[in-house]
Image (cartoon, rainbow, N blue to C red):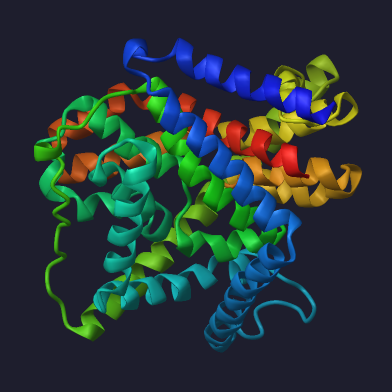
Length: 393
């Protein structure tokens, strides 16, 4: 039965993407089928094999060590601020982003990260039928972040037509940066975080291949990565430390606002209609939860978590999932967890449009115009990843 629902889920996702397509005659079926097969194989490898679980353990172990190192710095500055045994969210989940940001900066400075991103991007371009620039950008977004990635392609921004710019922005919204991954792993099982990272990379190509299909002229697909202005090693360290702290503070501020707003709206709806706003959203999103492989008995509650991620952000949804996770079956918990690991929410529209506008005002205005379509596509990527995972769980 789960395979039938998964097939229906895939057809629904592809149908919703097809409805929004701007060039249906140019959709390339072969790369899409190939990438879906790759998604299924990779999710089965990561979740159902000893090798995959061992790889995830290594990946999670590395981040556990990194979070431990970050804790040493946090303890030095904030030691004694919290009562013994307590784990304040800002100190233990958000502030480690600062240390992860520093490591990314070091790998960037040593040119290790650009080499990896370019190599993987070139390899992916052979599979996805898209340009080298689009493939590089997707990998780079997953490593250095949805706003920082545009700095590396600054030279190309002014030359890109709207359809190629859409693909670059869609990749940035569908993936998550490595600086945030450690924080996710404190709230969601690491194996689902790692699986979602891999699936979203291919899912972004699949959905954009349907919504926004085109063929890139090889002569216009020169992968010339923008060199960041040369800095000394310690200048670079200072910049990435400050950038990491900004991310932690911004995420913390958004959480304060969104959690408080959601609590207020829920209370108002409960007083007037005797049902919370989140429960209403749950009923609206329950059909989507069902095609993702979640049973009817859990679909409404799962739909509420999914909707919360869309209207607020993934951190708020993950926090609530952690509170009610015991009420879900292990399979449902895995499906929802994979769905939550992405930047597909309304706030990301502003972040991405602002990042592009800071580098090229004209192109930033173009991005703002197709912002809702970006969110639509990125949400379909999350649903697609969840459907694929439902096949192997």
